[in-house]
Length: 165
Image 1 (tube, rainbow, N blue to C red):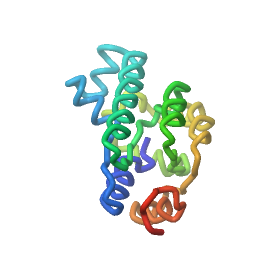
Image 2 (cartoon, one colour; image 1 turned 90 degrees about the horizontal axis):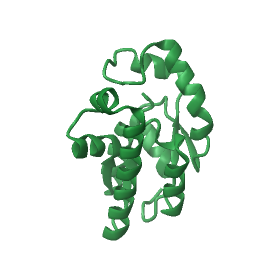
Image 3 (cartoon, one colour; image 1 turned 90 degrees about the vertical axis):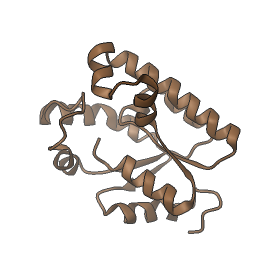
Image 4 (cartoon, rainbow, N blue to C red; image 1 turned 60 degrees about the horizontal axis):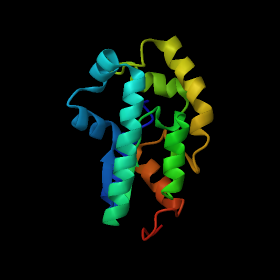
C-alpha cells in the first residue's frame, strides 16, 4: 500500500506499449462495489477469493490474447500462496516495488478508503506480516524514487520481452 504499484504500472505500460490492468479496479468493476464496501459487507475472505478469481481471469485473457500485459496487483495479492502459484505458472516476472515503511506511512497518511489501513500500528503490523511474501518476488526495485525513475529501473532489469533497455 502506497509503494506506487498502480502509478508505476500505468507509466510502465504506456512507455512500453504494453496493456495495463489494475487488479483492484477489475475487482471493483466486476463486483460493482468499492473495495471498502466489499470488505465491510462481504468480509476480507470474500474479497481475497474475488481477487484470486479475477487474477486467474486476467492471466487467462492475457495468455489467450497473446498481448504483453503489466498487471498492478493489490497489496495483499502476494500473501496468498494460490496467487503466487498462478503467477509462476503463467510465467510472469513479479516485481516488488520496495519502499521504506516510513515513506509508505507518509504516502498513505491522507488515505481514508483503505479497509486495512486503520492507524500507524496496524499499518506497520500489516507491512511486517506481508514482507516475507513480497520478498518472494522475482525482482526487487526501490520505489521511493520518482515514478518515471522506478519505471526505468524496471526496464533496466531486461525482463520485458521486446522492450529495449
